[in-house]
Amino acid sequence: MEDQNKYDLFDRYIRGELNGEQLDKFLERLESDLAFKEEYASYHLVVEGIREHERQELRTYMEQKARVRFMGNPWSKTWTYASAAVVMAFGVLYIALDQKNGNEAVAVKEQQKKQALNDTLHEMPEPEKENVAMEAPIAETITEQAPVPAAEIVEEEQYIDIDDPLEEAEEMVYPDPLNNEGLVRMEQDDELPVKADTRVYDTVVSLALSFDKENKVDTAHAEIVKKKEIKGRTEKIVVQFWKSPINYKGYLFDGRKLEVFGLDTFSQVSLRYRVLNVDLQVYEVYLKYGETYFKLVEDNRYHAYVKVKDPMIIEELK
Amino acid sequence: MWGRKEWDDDTLVIEIRKGNKEALVHLYEGNYAAIRSYILKNSGGPDDVEDILQEAVIAIWQKVAHPEFELTAKLSTFLFAIAKNLWLKALNKAKRTEAMEDHHEAKAISTAPHIESKDLQIVVQYMDKLGDTCKRLLHLFYFEEQDMKEIAVQLSFANSDTAKAKKYQCFKKLEHLVKEHFTKSDFIG
Image: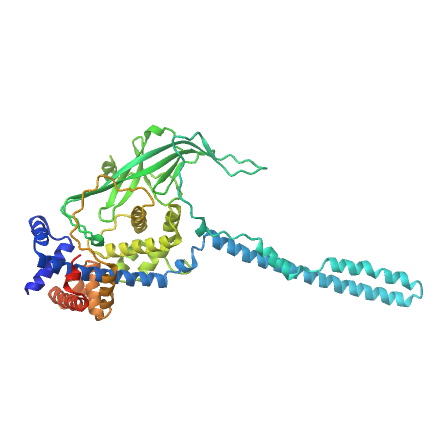
């Protein structure tokens, strides 16, 4: 029974259920009592093994069942280009076959014409040689319109360049915000210049994140931390102000870079955050413009500004 | 995607709490593109995407299964944030980027003994030698951190005391098997 009580105590410790004096006493004993320390080490190894066992089972399940892993993203460039290549190959094949059929039909018609002509000529005694000479150009025309040979189709396929986006992974490089003078983002076309977005100003904003935990023991990933911890880190976010020729108002945010469109008074822009889950260190980022707050969606896509209306959230962000 | 009907967050939470592993696949597939894009843009490769996404999905599973977990944002937001944190940690560890942790972080007093991964693997092997009820019971208690009351209901024990006694038996059995493999001194890190 005493043994079971000891394991209960260990259980309570790793689940963060020991507080105050109980926790201090436990940690003190762990440091001073070698036998207790050995028992805890044995217990801890088994617990971590149980957790690892479940992790491995879940991982194996995902590897076997998740189809994205094996097929890749169906909307990726690779798949798009591969699909395009298949469609083009079929297209070329179709045109070739169509042409071949057409030529055959032409040949049959010409043959019929020839036959009819010959029949007529046979009925006429003179001049036979001239009529024979007329056959040559017809034969040449048919040869010139021969169907595309298979080798040419293969060559056509080889010209299709299938980029593998997995090999295109590039380091995220941000330009120096202090050395930027009205950068213009546009796709240059020699014949048709397109007026595009202009980057007018860059700045870097530091978000000092703090995940306060009081009287709680963090046992995630076997990392046991003494109570009253303040965990935090600083996230540096590059904020780029863009101007769109169509006066687009919105943003794009990927967690490290924020592209802002349609906000002209740079000095009125700042960033705020709201912690959603302390253990997981999950937080939302908000953009403050003047006295208005906008929630930012961190998914690297363009979004319109969505104003925060909940007074509780606004109060929290102030 | 490809005929797999998407589950909304409420369904995912319910299914995770029921222990339905299909929820893992939904989370994995539904968030693959976003996580992949983030990691590839931040010095990672395709293998990193799989590792990080799997870890993030498992972390979500573990958290959602916990009875005290409350859904305060979209699961995809949670998953993205976890994946991002995991990736930044991995980058820091590999010294491929400057440390993001700043001086705010308090000094952690670690009392956790160091565990070699090969030792962990021994325990994993012996887990497979336990019966299904023992395995499930130990998973629910130590991995999902559910309380005994819920475990008793899930595994059809008479009450939480019975579940607790069974858990102790299972744990001791596993520990005994593992101890047979190691000398006592191996347990001290």
